[in-house]
Image 1 (cartoon, helix red, strand yellow):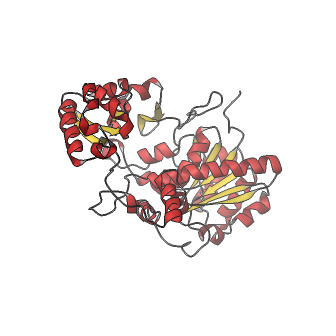
Image 2 (image 1 turned 90 degrees about the horizontal axis):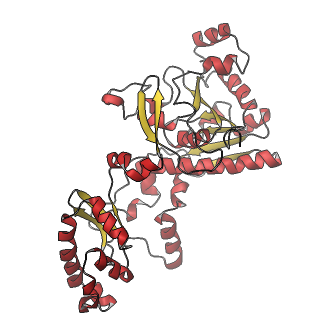
Image 3 (image 1 turned 90 degrees about the vertical axis):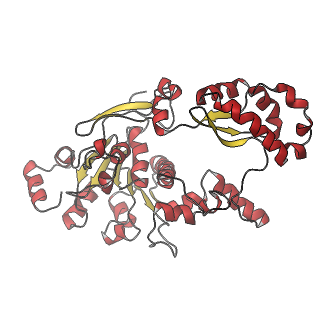
Length: 403
Protein backbone atom coordinates (compact mmCIF):
# COMPACT_ATOMS: atom_id res chain seq x y z
CA UNK A 1 0.00 0.00 0.00
CA UNK A 2 1.02 3.64 -0.44
CA UNK A 3 1.86 5.51 2.76
CA UNK A 4 0.89 4.46 6.26
CA UNK A 5 -2.45 3.28 7.58
CA UNK A 6 -3.34 6.65 9.15
CA UNK A 7 -1.68 8.92 6.60
CA UNK A 8 -4.97 10.58 5.57
CA UNK A 9 -5.91 11.67 9.12
CA UNK A 10 -5.17 15.10 10.59
CA UNK A 11 -5.01 15.53 14.36
CA UNK A 12 -4.83 18.79 16.31
CA UNK A 13 -2.88 17.93 19.46
CA UNK A 14 -3.59 20.16 22.48
CA UNK A 15 -2.00 17.75 24.96
CA UNK A 16 0.90 17.93 27.39
CA UNK A 17 2.91 15.75 29.78
CA UNK A 18 2.35 11.98 29.17
CA UNK A 19 -1.14 10.50 28.68
CA UNK A 20 -2.30 12.85 25.93
CA UNK A 21 1.02 13.00 24.05
CA UNK A 22 1.26 9.20 24.10
CA UNK A 23 -2.22 8.95 22.58
CA UNK A 24 -1.26 11.29 19.74
CA UNK A 25 2.18 9.68 19.37
CA UNK A 26 0.51 6.36 18.57
CA UNK A 27 -1.56 8.08 15.88
CA UNK A 28 1.43 10.00 14.50
CA UNK A 29 3.73 6.98 14.41
CA UNK A 30 1.23 5.14 12.22
CA UNK A 31 0.97 8.02 9.78
CA UNK A 32 -1.42 10.67 11.10
CA UNK A 33 -0.52 14.32 10.48
CA UNK A 34 -0.37 15.52 14.08
CA UNK A 35 -0.03 19.27 14.67
CA UNK A 36 1.07 19.84 18.26
CA UNK A 37 -0.14 23.19 19.59
CA UNK A 38 2.20 24.49 22.32
CA UNK A 39 2.28 27.51 24.58
CA UNK A 40 4.48 30.31 23.17
CA UNK A 41 7.84 30.56 24.89
CA UNK A 42 7.61 27.49 27.11
CA UNK A 43 5.81 24.75 25.21
CA UNK A 44 4.77 21.40 26.62
CA UNK A 45 5.87 21.16 30.31
CA UNK A 46 7.31 17.72 29.46
CA UNK A 47 10.14 19.58 27.71
CA UNK A 48 11.45 20.37 31.20
CA UNK A 49 11.32 16.77 32.46
CA UNK A 50 14.24 14.35 32.20
CA UNK A 51 16.11 12.32 31.43
CA UNK A 52 18.50 14.72 29.70
CA UNK A 53 21.77 13.83 27.88
CA UNK A 54 24.61 14.46 30.29
CA UNK A 55 22.01 15.29 32.95
CA UNK A 56 21.93 18.87 31.64
CA UNK A 57 18.34 20.19 31.42
CA UNK A 58 17.41 21.73 28.08
CA UNK A 59 13.89 22.23 26.60
CA UNK A 60 14.92 20.56 23.33
CA UNK A 61 16.71 17.59 24.94
CA UNK A 62 14.15 15.99 27.23
CA UNK A 63 14.20 12.25 26.58
CA UNK A 64 10.58 12.03 27.71
CA UNK A 65 9.43 14.73 25.29
CA UNK A 66 11.54 13.37 22.43
CA UNK A 67 10.01 9.91 22.82
CA UNK A 68 6.40 11.10 23.18
CA UNK A 69 6.40 13.47 20.22
CA UNK A 70 7.99 11.71 17.27
CA UNK A 71 6.43 12.42 13.88
CA UNK A 72 4.58 15.52 15.11
CA UNK A 73 4.74 19.10 13.89
CA UNK A 74 4.92 21.89 16.48
CA UNK A 75 3.29 25.28 16.33
CA UNK A 76 2.98 27.83 19.12
CA UNK A 77 -0.35 29.49 19.85
CA UNK A 78 -1.81 31.42 22.78
CA UNK A 79 -5.26 29.91 23.22
CA UNK A 80 -6.19 32.48 25.87
CA UNK A 81 -6.26 35.25 23.26
CA UNK A 82 -9.24 35.86 21.00
CA UNK A 83 -7.00 35.80 17.93
CA UNK A 84 -5.46 32.53 19.07
CA UNK A 85 -8.92 31.04 19.50
CA UNK A 86 -9.91 32.08 15.97
CA UNK A 87 -6.71 30.59 14.54
CA UNK A 88 -7.38 27.31 16.33
CA UNK A 89 -10.90 27.20 14.90
CA UNK A 90 -9.40 27.65 11.43
CA UNK A 91 -7.15 24.65 12.13
CA UNK A 92 -10.08 22.62 13.45
CA UNK A 93 -11.89 23.14 10.14
CA UNK A 94 -9.09 21.15 8.45
CA UNK A 95 -8.89 18.39 11.08
CA UNK A 96 -10.43 14.99 11.66
CA UNK A 97 -9.54 14.76 15.35
CA UNK A 98 -8.75 17.05 18.28
CA UNK A 99 -7.12 15.57 21.39
CA UNK A 100 -6.80 17.54 24.64
CA UNK A 101 -5.97 16.70 28.23
CA UNK A 102 -6.72 19.89 30.12
CA UNK A 103 -8.86 19.93 33.25
CA UNK A 104 -12.54 19.64 32.21
CA UNK A 105 -13.26 23.31 32.86
CA UNK A 106 -10.47 24.65 30.62
CA UNK A 107 -11.74 24.11 27.07
CA UNK A 108 -15.22 25.58 27.78
CA UNK A 109 -13.61 28.55 29.56
CA UNK A 110 -11.59 29.24 26.39
CA UNK A 111 -14.70 29.09 24.22
CA UNK A 112 -13.39 25.84 22.74
CA UNK A 113 -15.83 23.25 24.06
CA UNK A 114 -16.82 20.40 21.78
CA UNK A 115 -20.11 22.15 21.04
CA UNK A 116 -18.17 25.18 19.79
CA UNK A 117 -15.70 23.13 17.75
CA UNK A 118 -18.36 21.05 16.04
CA UNK A 119 -20.00 24.26 14.78
CA UNK A 120 -17.06 24.68 12.40
CA UNK A 121 -16.56 20.94 11.81
CA UNK A 122 -19.65 18.75 12.41
CA UNK A 123 -17.77 15.51 11.70
CA UNK A 124 -15.04 16.31 14.22
CA UNK A 125 -13.94 13.75 16.81
CA UNK A 126 -12.70 15.35 20.02
CA UNK A 127 -11.00 13.20 22.64
CA UNK A 128 -10.72 14.64 26.15
CA UNK A 129 -8.39 12.92 28.62
CA UNK A 130 -8.71 13.96 32.26
CA UNK A 131 -8.12 12.55 35.72
CA UNK A 132 -11.73 11.68 36.56
CA UNK A 133 -13.74 12.41 33.41
CA UNK A 134 -15.83 15.32 32.18
CA UNK A 135 -18.53 15.01 34.85
CA UNK A 136 -19.17 13.49 38.27
CA UNK A 137 -18.33 14.67 41.80
CA UNK A 138 -14.56 14.15 41.33
CA UNK A 139 -14.43 15.98 37.99
CA UNK A 140 -12.35 18.95 39.14
CA UNK A 141 -10.22 17.16 41.73
CA UNK A 142 -6.47 17.44 41.39
CA UNK A 143 -4.62 14.15 41.10
CA UNK A 144 -1.24 12.65 40.29
CA UNK A 145 -0.08 9.29 38.98
CA UNK A 146 0.32 8.11 42.58
CA UNK A 147 -3.17 9.29 43.56
CA UNK A 148 -4.80 7.62 40.56
CA UNK A 149 -2.89 4.39 41.16
CA UNK A 150 -4.10 4.38 44.76
CA UNK A 151 -7.72 5.29 43.97
CA UNK A 152 -7.83 2.85 41.06
CA UNK A 153 -7.47 -0.06 43.47
CA UNK A 154 -4.10 -1.37 42.33
CA UNK A 155 -2.09 -0.29 45.38
CA UNK A 156 -4.33 -2.14 47.81
CA UNK A 157 -3.13 -5.45 46.36
CA UNK A 158 0.46 -4.53 45.46
CA UNK A 159 3.43 -5.14 47.74
CA UNK A 160 4.33 -7.38 50.66
CA UNK A 161 1.56 -8.44 53.05
CA UNK A 162 3.26 -6.94 56.12
CA UNK A 163 4.17 -3.60 54.53
CA UNK A 164 2.33 -0.55 53.25
CA UNK A 165 0.77 -0.63 49.74
CA UNK A 166 3.12 0.40 46.94
CA UNK A 167 2.78 1.67 43.37
CA UNK A 168 4.48 0.63 40.18
CA UNK A 169 7.35 2.90 39.11
CA UNK A 170 7.26 5.29 36.18
CA UNK A 171 4.17 6.57 34.40
CA UNK A 172 2.44 3.25 33.80
CA UNK A 173 -1.03 4.66 34.37
CA UNK A 174 -0.44 7.57 32.01
CA UNK A 175 0.75 5.35 29.18
CA UNK A 176 -2.16 2.97 29.70
CA UNK A 177 -4.62 5.86 29.56
CA UNK A 178 -2.96 7.15 26.39
CA UNK A 179 -3.29 3.74 24.77
CA UNK A 180 -6.99 3.52 25.67
CA UNK A 181 -7.52 7.06 24.36
CA UNK A 182 -5.88 6.23 21.03
CA UNK A 183 -8.07 3.15 20.57
CA UNK A 184 -11.21 5.09 21.52
CA UNK A 185 -10.25 7.90 19.15
CA UNK A 186 -9.86 5.52 16.24
CA UNK A 187 -13.23 3.92 16.97
CA UNK A 188 -14.91 7.33 16.95
CA UNK A 189 -13.00 8.34 13.83
CA UNK A 190 -14.31 5.31 11.94
CA UNK A 191 -17.88 6.32 12.82
CA UNK A 192 -17.19 9.85 11.59
CA UNK A 193 -15.50 8.64 8.40
CA UNK A 194 -18.14 6.11 7.38
CA UNK A 195 -21.32 7.52 8.94
CA UNK A 196 -20.54 11.23 9.01
CA UNK A 197 -21.18 11.50 12.75
CA UNK A 198 -18.66 13.31 14.94
CA UNK A 199 -18.54 12.80 18.68
CA UNK A 200 -16.86 13.72 21.96
CA UNK A 201 -14.80 10.92 23.53
CA UNK A 202 -14.45 11.20 27.33
CA UNK A 203 -11.44 9.28 28.73
CA UNK A 204 -11.10 9.18 32.52
CA UNK A 205 -7.61 8.10 33.58
CA UNK A 206 -9.17 6.87 36.82
CA UNK A 207 -11.61 4.65 34.95
CA UNK A 208 -8.92 3.26 32.66
CA UNK A 209 -7.44 1.82 35.87
CA UNK A 210 -10.73 0.31 37.02
CA UNK A 211 -11.18 -1.34 33.64
CA UNK A 212 -7.52 -2.11 32.96
CA UNK A 213 -6.38 -5.33 31.37
CA UNK A 214 -4.41 -6.49 34.42
CA UNK A 215 -5.60 -7.97 37.71
CA UNK A 216 -7.76 -5.02 38.72
CA UNK A 217 -10.61 -6.08 36.45
CA UNK A 218 -10.42 -9.59 37.90
CA UNK A 219 -10.36 -8.24 41.45
CA UNK A 220 -13.39 -6.02 40.83
CA UNK A 221 -15.35 -8.90 39.34
CA UNK A 222 -14.27 -11.14 42.20
CA UNK A 223 -15.59 -8.65 44.73
CA UNK A 224 -18.94 -8.50 42.91
CA UNK A 225 -19.21 -12.29 43.11
CA UNK A 226 -18.10 -13.05 46.66
CA UNK A 227 -17.77 -9.69 48.43
CA UNK A 228 -14.15 -10.25 49.45
CA UNK A 229 -11.45 -7.68 48.68
CA UNK A 230 -8.18 -8.65 47.04
CA UNK A 231 -5.37 -8.91 49.57
CA UNK A 232 -1.61 -8.74 49.42
CA UNK A 233 -0.29 -12.19 50.15
CA UNK A 234 2.57 -14.48 49.32
CA UNK A 235 1.78 -17.05 46.60
CA UNK A 236 0.82 -20.36 48.22
CA UNK A 237 -0.23 -22.49 45.26
CA UNK A 238 3.23 -23.57 44.09
CA UNK A 239 6.55 -24.56 45.68
CA UNK A 240 8.54 -22.69 43.00
CA UNK A 241 7.62 -19.16 42.06
CA UNK A 242 8.99 -15.65 42.32
CA UNK A 243 12.34 -13.92 41.89
CA UNK A 244 15.55 -15.82 42.65
CA UNK A 245 19.23 -14.81 42.65
CA UNK A 246 21.76 -16.41 40.34
CA UNK A 247 25.44 -15.89 39.46
CA UNK A 248 25.04 -12.52 37.73
CA UNK A 249 21.62 -11.20 38.72
CA UNK A 250 18.10 -12.52 39.06
CA UNK A 251 15.68 -14.85 37.31
CA UNK A 252 11.91 -15.21 37.57
CA UNK A 253 9.96 -18.47 37.80
CA UNK A 254 6.24 -19.08 37.65
CA UNK A 255 4.83 -22.58 37.86
CA UNK A 256 1.98 -24.77 39.04
CA UNK A 257 2.30 -28.14 40.80
CA UNK A 258 1.76 -30.05 37.55
CA UNK A 259 5.02 -28.57 36.23
CA UNK A 260 7.11 -30.20 38.96
CA UNK A 261 8.57 -32.82 36.55
CA UNK A 262 9.81 -30.02 34.28
CA UNK A 263 11.37 -28.22 37.23
CA UNK A 264 13.19 -31.37 38.35
CA UNK A 265 14.39 -31.95 34.80
CA UNK A 266 15.72 -28.38 34.68
CA UNK A 267 17.84 -28.82 37.82
CA UNK A 268 19.03 -32.27 36.71
CA UNK A 269 17.12 -34.30 39.33
CA UNK A 270 14.31 -36.11 37.48
CA UNK A 271 14.84 -39.05 39.85
CA UNK A 272 13.13 -37.09 42.63
CA UNK A 273 9.74 -37.29 40.96
CA UNK A 274 8.93 -40.39 43.06
CA UNK A 275 10.08 -38.77 46.30
CA UNK A 276 7.29 -38.93 48.93
CA UNK A 277 7.62 -35.19 49.51
CA UNK A 278 6.05 -34.74 46.06
CA UNK A 279 3.45 -37.48 46.37
CA UNK A 280 0.40 -35.29 47.01
CA UNK A 281 -0.63 -31.64 46.66
CA UNK A 282 -0.61 -31.25 50.44
CA UNK A 283 2.89 -32.71 50.73
CA UNK A 284 4.11 -30.65 47.79
CA UNK A 285 3.01 -27.39 49.40
CA UNK A 286 4.23 -28.15 52.90
CA UNK A 287 6.86 -25.84 54.42
CA UNK A 288 9.31 -28.75 54.59
CA UNK A 289 8.98 -29.49 50.88
CA UNK A 290 9.33 -25.82 49.95
CA UNK A 291 12.49 -25.58 52.03
CA UNK A 292 13.86 -28.73 50.40
CA UNK A 293 13.18 -27.35 46.92
CA UNK A 294 14.88 -24.07 47.73
CA UNK A 295 17.90 -25.93 49.10
CA UNK A 296 17.99 -27.84 45.82
CA UNK A 297 17.43 -24.81 43.60
CA UNK A 298 19.59 -22.04 45.07
CA UNK A 299 23.02 -23.74 44.74
CA UNK A 300 22.11 -24.73 41.17
CA UNK A 301 21.21 -21.12 40.37
CA UNK A 302 24.37 -19.62 41.88
CA UNK A 303 26.50 -21.73 39.52
CA UNK A 304 24.80 -20.27 36.45
CA UNK A 305 24.26 -16.91 34.78
CA UNK A 306 20.81 -15.51 34.07
CA UNK A 307 20.87 -16.53 30.43
CA UNK A 308 22.18 -20.00 31.27
CA UNK A 309 19.29 -20.47 33.70
CA UNK A 310 16.82 -19.24 31.09
CA UNK A 311 18.23 -21.62 28.48
CA UNK A 312 17.96 -24.58 30.87
CA UNK A 313 14.41 -23.63 31.83
CA UNK A 314 13.30 -23.33 28.23
CA UNK A 315 14.90 -26.67 27.30
CA UNK A 316 12.85 -28.26 30.07
CA UNK A 317 9.78 -26.22 29.02
CA UNK A 318 9.65 -24.72 32.49
CA UNK A 319 8.54 -21.05 32.69
CA UNK A 320 11.71 -19.26 33.75
CA UNK A 321 13.16 -16.05 32.34
CA UNK A 322 15.85 -13.51 33.08
CA UNK A 323 15.15 -10.31 35.03
CA UNK A 324 16.39 -7.50 32.78
CA UNK A 325 17.27 -3.90 33.57
CA UNK A 326 16.67 -1.12 31.02
CA UNK A 327 20.34 -1.37 30.05
CA UNK A 328 20.00 -5.13 29.56
CA UNK A 329 16.98 -4.63 27.32
CA UNK A 330 18.90 -2.37 24.95
CA UNK A 331 21.48 -5.13 24.43
CA UNK A 332 19.15 -8.13 24.51
CA UNK A 333 19.64 -10.21 21.33
CA UNK A 334 15.93 -10.90 20.78
CA UNK A 335 14.89 -7.25 20.69
CA UNK A 336 17.86 -6.29 18.56
CA UNK A 337 17.29 -9.07 16.02
CA UNK A 338 13.67 -7.94 15.64
CA UNK A 339 14.80 -4.34 15.21
CA UNK A 340 12.79 -3.06 18.15
CA UNK A 341 15.28 -0.34 19.05
CA UNK A 342 15.38 2.50 16.54
CA UNK A 343 18.03 5.20 16.27
CA UNK A 344 16.57 8.68 15.86
CA UNK A 345 18.69 11.76 15.20
CA UNK A 346 17.55 15.09 16.63
CA UNK A 347 19.13 18.41 15.58
CA UNK A 348 19.73 19.51 19.19
CA UNK A 349 19.68 16.39 21.38
CA UNK A 350 21.71 14.16 19.06
CA UNK A 351 21.24 10.51 18.13
CA UNK A 352 19.81 7.98 20.58
CA UNK A 353 18.02 4.64 20.54
CA UNK A 354 14.29 4.75 21.22
CA UNK A 355 11.66 2.01 21.71
CA UNK A 356 10.11 1.02 18.42
CA UNK A 357 6.63 -0.12 17.38
CA UNK A 358 4.24 -1.55 19.99
CA UNK A 359 2.97 -3.94 17.31
CA UNK A 360 3.88 -4.90 13.73
CA UNK A 361 1.80 -4.63 10.58
CA UNK A 362 2.61 -6.27 7.28
CA UNK A 363 1.57 -3.13 5.37
CA UNK A 364 1.55 0.59 6.22
CA UNK A 365 2.73 0.24 9.79
CA UNK A 366 4.91 2.12 12.27
CA UNK A 367 7.56 4.47 10.89
CA UNK A 368 9.74 7.36 12.07
CA UNK A 369 9.27 10.13 9.52
CA UNK A 370 10.73 12.91 11.67
CA UNK A 371 12.09 13.37 15.21
CA UNK A 372 10.21 15.26 17.90
CA UNK A 373 9.86 18.90 16.84
CA UNK A 374 11.61 21.98 18.12
CA UNK A 375 9.28 24.43 19.84
CA UNK A 376 7.33 26.23 17.11
CA UNK A 377 9.44 24.59 14.41
CA UNK A 378 6.53 24.42 11.97
CA UNK A 379 4.94 27.83 12.56
CA UNK A 380 5.73 29.12 9.08
CA UNK A 381 4.89 25.81 7.42
CA UNK A 382 1.43 25.66 8.99
CA UNK A 383 0.45 29.32 9.32
CA UNK A 384 1.82 30.50 5.98
CA UNK A 385 1.77 27.32 3.92
CA UNK A 386 -1.62 26.01 5.04
CA UNK A 387 -3.63 28.85 6.59
CA UNK A 388 -2.55 31.62 4.21
CA UNK A 389 -0.76 33.98 6.60
CA UNK A 390 2.20 36.04 5.37
CA UNK A 391 5.57 36.27 7.11
CA UNK A 392 4.66 39.82 8.08
CA UNK A 393 1.50 38.46 9.71
CA UNK A 394 3.62 36.00 11.67
CA UNK A 395 5.90 38.75 12.90
CA UNK A 396 2.88 40.73 14.06
CA UNK A 397 1.38 37.69 15.79
CA UNK A 398 4.71 37.02 17.48
CA UNK A 399 5.01 40.61 18.70
CA UNK A 400 1.49 40.41 20.14
CA UNK A 401 2.29 37.18 21.99
CA UNK A 402 -0.17 35.16 19.92
CA UNK A 403 2.42 32.68 18.63
